[in-house]
Image (tube, rainbow over all chains, first blue to last red):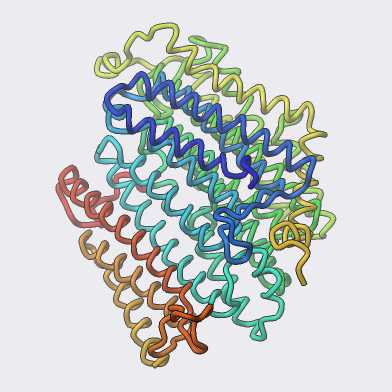
Length: 503
Length: 115
């Protein structure tokens, strides 16, 4: 039994249970929030190190051999994703200490955050499709409550849309799992990868592949299934928005990449071309949606969608450098997007609003914060030498090598439009003269103790430093992404790690 | 039997989707519930129906007698039912609260967060 594989879901579970036990003592919950997420990040890094040195790790919980047991697998891609979950979790936990209001803390914000992280880590590590469904549900339940916690009217409306569309996606996923079991007789992903090539009706397999594409596509918010995202992500408190923006849609992307590199590779000409088309449309519609918005978090929400397009573009091209580009892009995106949401929270604290027309003069008030916004914003648009530049460079190069010029043109054009809307935020919120405040707004801004400011700014500064570091030292990260893509593109190692040296 | 169940499942999907397209928020939740049941029945049917043979190992034997029902889909459905129950309970509380704070159960009037 490899303990490192079990710890990533187990640590958040323990932290959630302990937080529930200390329901009345908020200070204990706050300590647990940081300790739990820091522990998660630590074990995730240890897991990544182990996978890097020893190859794909697999274990059977409960002791039944695969394909009957409960399989946990970590290849490099999974391990990278778990590290990112830990990193986002820790950053948001520290940020929450200073930004979450007492009422939400009293009503179980921290236990829910741990449960969310547990679901996310479980989804990254499981080697079984039905368990993936269960982990998805764990994650969704926690996210439903986090989204609705507080009970403001906007939150309720956002939550209803979010809950409905995610439940439809779950029902589709479940139906697809059922039919896949009927067709192949197994749900263990490694076993499926071996058996699907022997299923006689290749049309059925392609149909199932498309069902999975729709189910995961809703969760990943791809075109034309993304409408729940901009309707809900800007409604909860900013710490919740940040963890959603960083992690949730990426679980959908992870699932897409996993099933379309491991299971559904029979009809690449059809399925992956379709993914490529969807990727292009996702990029373009997302960025166009962002341009018309005038609210900090809504702009960022639409940019999540357009970035999802880049991530699945690599999957659609389906070559080794392209998938490596996707992995690199996911790493870059999670760090940058979480950071931008956290900055929007600070801006709101300074000016009492997310509306761009009410923000202003932030550069004069705090130049340091402006730099901290500018780094992830330019990185998102793909300015060298930040991480986004190398992420986009590798995808564009892969696109040119694959001679898919349309998607390359879309990627480059969307990049420019991203820069445009980041400049809009910069000009409106930071550069513009300070707008006259109404007396009502004045009341919303409370004087903050210094300690609270440092809790807000440390996560932002750390994530910004990581973006810069990933840009300056892109080589090691890129090597990591390439190794991860090699494992994804050669499923034989994955199958061997789970099933042993069987037939 | 499979044919009959296929029609039942199709009817359930149709009914669920129809209910979800209505404007009332309560019908939305009912529709979601029906959709979940349709998916469960689909798993049940797709994984093969076996009459009157439960996968229980008789005494003095080490494996169940030959044509027996596959226990795995049953376990899957059971899990899915439990999850579905939890989700629906949450959804009911959510719409109750939404009607309380919004003062309406008409989905067409809940557009404040749309873009």
